[in-house]
Image (cartoon, rainbow, N blue to C red):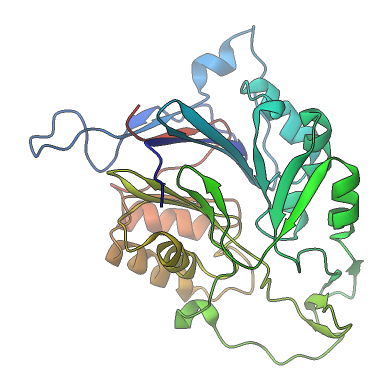
Length: 339
């Protein structure tokens, strides 16, 4: 397999903006170390100076997630948009603020068929102005329903992600359950096996009409929505290791890391970032500690919980892995590998 010489990841959409976050070098080492390591990781922020600059416009936050992934090998670069946020309005605004050209993106990957991940896809495709592959799982467009505890229902809340509509907007739907090689060390994970016991959990009894999330199968059967269509993204960076991105990690962030290694080999985990799904009301509270302990055991060098990870996850990772934790914000740029 090819590897990237370096990868740069820009946070285009995230739940928060924080102009007080400082730039930082690698929390696991860098300049001044005497063990032969070099600083291969830099975190830069859209910070105080940018927010106070009258020539600039500040970015916006929303309850969604989107990354620009730029992997470089030699003189070649592949640019991947991983997820598209909740709304095209915020995605377009932030791309303009952060100087991202939609027409320069080679490929889109949508982690799963929930609106906070696909919501900006149609606006993005219009801005790109040409046909662009959109990789996702074949089940991502299957009808989804949400039933609240007070009886309210959100019917087919993923209707905007119909593959026919994506195609009309200029996308080329690429539907696969397997890993997809996007070039220069960038791969989708494909379907993620759920083997870690605490992440798989015990499925609650299925009773139609009970509060919860539901999906209609391709065979027309109503089932509990376990988001089996979710996939992640992994970048294999030469002399650095694997950089793993999650959408919501419905399959579990540890399971996602395991699948990333199944795709790319047993490489060190340089970073994991994205939604960890630990802030969801039905996720057992103990999973926060179990996940943090597992990340420590895996020696994940950089951990950036985002989006649906929840306040308790940020607090626990910051407390237990202070040298590894990076606080997320829109406009954060992370660089791994040789410049």
